[in-house]
Image 1: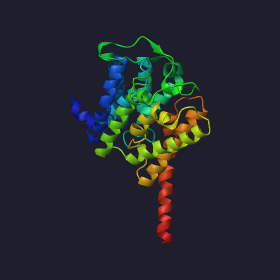
Image 2: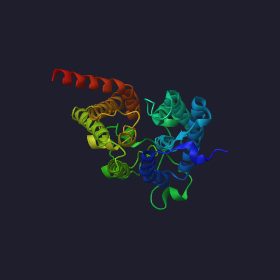
Image 3: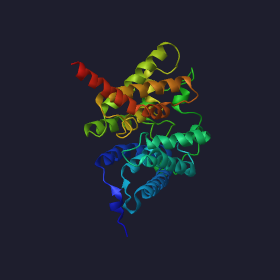
Length: 316
């Protein structure tokens, strides 16, 4: 019988990402109840089985599971609405692991972020579950720690409310995060603390985070001053999944570029495309599509930068 520990590829970096996500996960339980953890358990089991299955087809009995799939499962879960059905979550994580990662050969070979591939698939396949029925968060103590889930359904997330001319959502509400939304995107404070931890432990690149947020901030400012959007730049950065994605999705070490200049270009493109989609399309949140779109250009960006550097060396 194969020992479970020998099935996993040990990845210290992935464990640090998991640690950084734990406060966000606990806060989501406080906001939305214990159903969050059962949803996570179902997603993780489906993700592990999917990865082992696809790697077994590729490598046979020598198949191993990367610890990165645990990060994928947790990130995927935290991007979901609190009321999403279990079956939809299972379909999403299986699709993300198999078609966003496994078909490319496994960890280190995928060009797309697998968590976002899975979320995108169920977003376009089952839009009603992903865009409607946002639950009102619990408040006070003990909050969701004493409940299974909230029965009351919120009318809209902050990013949807900010699209209305008479919207009035305070910065404190957005920063601390007692708001409706996907499980992991509510508290800007916890996401920023996680970003600090990831940067200090050299787990994630600050260049990717900063370039994404600065690009989104500059374009949001221009659109706000032009009267195109109602939310001011700070509200735009603190609402929706932009901040969460900039810290955890854009910095994916596999699908993001490696050279520093390429990281900055990549982040600038993701931030700008996200704001354009958020502003001019029917999708309230554009960061998911922005990352997947720009993922396709990473090889081109890296190759073009290398070509420019070689030309400089020749001319010198």
